[in-house]
Length: 154
Image (tube, rainbow, N blue to C red; front, side):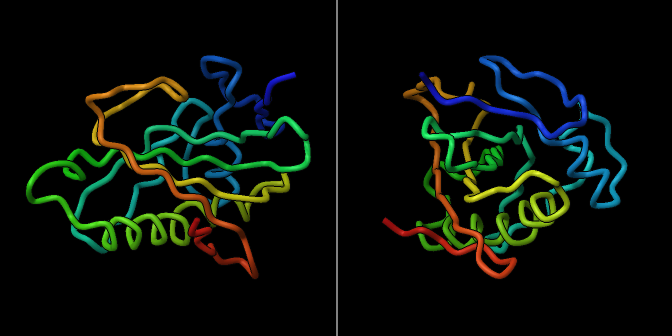
């Protein structure tokens, strides 16, 4: 049996491959105006590196063992690739910032228990789980401890 994804009990829109958007309840519960089909209603704050990012999608991902639930927040930041792109330490700083300032308020405002937050940055929209050899992508996982994101450096 493969992994499954679930939505919060809000009628959130269905995404391809059975993935469910979190946007509706998370943003409404956090006080932002949002509809279930509008994950970008809450603006992404400016990143510490100076890059601009926008939310591509967010959803819950339940692992095959059924014991872990990941909240995935996927962002597009076109300038993460190229000669003038920030170095790795700045990218990690940006992802920690996105986890603490953007993802945690969503996760904290939801009734679903979440074990980990995964932040991804890509220079372009890429379908979840699909390879794109031309895309520059970064993924980092964070544990949640005392209401803060803890980077799970491997």
